[in-house]
Length: 143
Image (cartoon, rainbow, N blue to C red):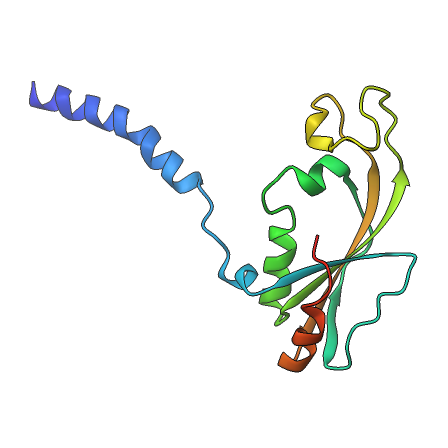
């Protein structure tokens, strides 16, 4: 009888262990990386105390991918932090506007559950910025 109850306990507790392992812990590298956004086609000059350390090739993202998760750029912030960066600049360019007539441009994309919204090319640029340079960036808008 004891063996059977042990087997039942193992069967019942095994999924809990798997779920516990599946949850992602916050990336310590990502915690200190600030995120800023600029147009890929426009001016995106960084302060003199910032040094570019990493740049990704363009990646195709949907509007929903950019706003629906609570931290859409978490992986990119972690990569910037592990490379020694403290600023992530997201350069974007819309490649295809919204095409769903049930979701006007003025509506938030999260209010349009059947569509992914517009498509963007994103380039992630990581910078290592000094404290004075960071204070210059604080007044700018974050995504």
